[in-house]
Image (cartoon, rainbow, N blue to C red; front, side, top):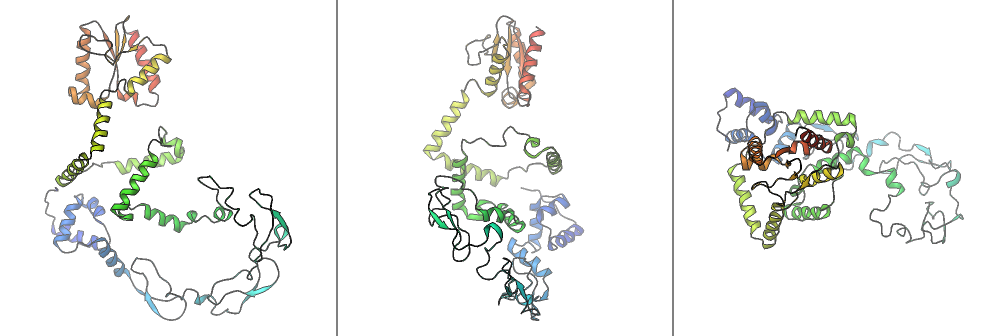
Length: 417
């Protein structure tokens, strides 16, 4: 729990003012460099803490003003609705002002037939074509009532190229899905390629806002659980297309440089908060509940035992492949096939009496207290039996050019013998 800190009177007035002007708890915690829970408790104590919906309504009402409807009717309405969207017209008034002074204006049909039509319909919408002329064109695609073509599915049946509304046809009725039968992702139609909704700025902004909410906020707890299980089963076993790829390979050099700068600035000075007692208790209860499931318990124990005694591990397999590829005189013995005293090295060269030890820092810190102590004890013990050790740590194995680094380290250790 956060420690109790008394704010000064000046800080209290400033926090209250900034909160009512629209700053949220996160921005206030960064400005005053205090835990946001302290600020929340202070706002609750003075009766100013509001829920998300109450705060939204308050901020909208604070900046709301009455404006005249843009259709010219003279009526006044609030500038913003309850969701914060700006409104310019009363419902049903958005088309009134378009043809107020030009109601009988006429234009030529855009199909090229040289016929005239009223520019606006009775609702004020702008028109470009006479009814039925939308698909008329000049040249090769000009309307021809008797022209015939073959069905696009390949059945060799003939159809009229245009229907009675002058729309161009491609398939016999019911044959349009034949080409996409059995395909998971049928090709997009001409209309979707030309007018893709996902490329519109307003649609992309709406998608961004929706995707920023969690599954529980969007679907509810029960549906969110089912959705997560479904997604997990779908991607299980499939490698990520981003794995083992650098920012430069994914985004290009210029964008990668900008992304690295942004991440560096965002991560500067950031410290992960410690778990509260309630969070620890909730996690404990959750895993105790899972442990009551026989299937989950058996699966977890099986994985623990397999991984505990799995030999060779990932690092050892990599070193074994390197020794075979570069013809290095070392044999794997990490499964206990060869012992030096009571210890089992990972790789051994009996002729030159050299051993290779591959390790990760996490387990050595737990067992020995530090990696340095582990190395000192290992060198001292193997020296009693006349063996030298080459250590290869995780800092080498996690590099992109790990293979060449390992070869150089092994060859250098053999030369120093």
